[in-house]
Amino acid sequence: MEQIRSIKGTRDILPTEALQWQEIEEIIHDFMELHGYGEIRTPAFEQTNLFTRGVGAETDIVSKEMYSWVDQGGESLTLKPELTAPVVRSFIQHNLAGKSPINRLYYIDSLFRRERPQKGRQRQFHQFGIEAFGSPYPEQDAEVIAIAYKIWSVFGIEEITLHLNSIGSPEIRPEYLRVLRETLTPHADKFCHTCNNRLKTNALRVFDCKSESCQYLLDEHAPMIIDHITSEDREHFDRVCELLDGMGIAYRLNKKMVRGLDYYTRTTFEITSPVLGAQNSLCGGGRYDRLVEQLGGKTTPAIGFAAGIERLLLALSKKEALQENPIADIYMVTLGDASLIRSLSIADDLRREKGLRVIVETLRRSLKSQMREANRCGANYAVILGDNELEKQVALVKNMKDGEQLAIPLDKLEEAFSISTEHHHPADES
Ligand code: HAM
Figure (cartoon, rainbow, N blue to C red):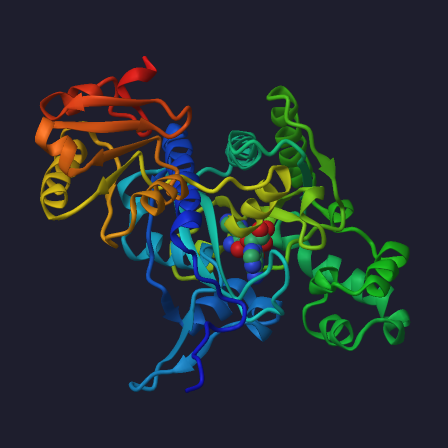
């Protein structure tokens, strides 16, 4: 029979790898809570027009990459391709603005974009990110950018570059786009087909083009949006830079970085890492002062960012060969029926009383293969209980690191492992 396989661009995360995901998620939860951010979880799918209206109909995400369908009730639905629009929808729906003038939210979630899969780019992928609603001031930008910047060193990733730009207030957009169109149209035949269309429909999106020749043409001819922002926008941007300087956060002005989603206003930023290769963006974000209003809420300034967890894992795997994660502290080697019954209850006691991860043999293997299994699980100790031991009411406790073996009375076993309830802790490591 033909084997059913996972969909292209999606991946299973198997137990040893899942442990690494759990660690990463724990770091994110802790880090966000340290900064006063509360977790928000939104549904996997939304009405399609949340994204067409929120992210923008001409963006790559909406025009090419959404998983949309019409359900049995005739409604157009979409698997979420990003989280800012859903979080804004939820912010409005639950009137969070009415409950507090400032709302700091974070998320860890699965997203869906029908992109061409490659290293660091999937069709189902994961992001963590934050959205801060309520403050129009540069200190809010600085707070969000600082969180996006600092979290990488907690993961042990030091080689990063922060790119910063301002695309100004929406008021300057029509005039800037006019100038942009006017300057680029004489070269239109040299741009790719998509960019040609973009020049007519949403000219800012030409900056998103991945083609080298289009990027070259932009370098040669395009006016830069930051050179067209208002003096208030400039002041805001300068203050953001000052605050980042004050925090010792290094950044690079990147005038071409307008970000591929329509909702941005003023500050935009991205963090890249050279260890990632072609898909070098670890995270991206910016201010979106008009989105809440655009989606039907009261005008509320906001800023946020999102980071790709698969990209983080890729950066970590470049740093050091991933270690196999141990899944057990203790492996109970069982030899026969009586040994099995006793081992099962000892295992339960050690889990409950000592918080130790204990696995009991269930394959009736030879002593030798059970010891091999104990190693494979990364157990620090094997507890061996044979007929001889049962008769003497002891267990042989073997230290898997140094091979040392001790006979410990069964009623002293818990005590022997009582130094710490932390994982991987044995009695004699004190
Ligand atoms: P974005 O730039 O589309 O922004 O995505 C943010 C990050 O998600 C990227 O820097 C990358 O690390 C990761 N990412 C994006 N697409 C993929 C993919 N196909 N496979 C793996 N990783 C991917 C946003 O999504 C905005 N909502 C960010 C934001 C929040 N702006 C304001 N608040």
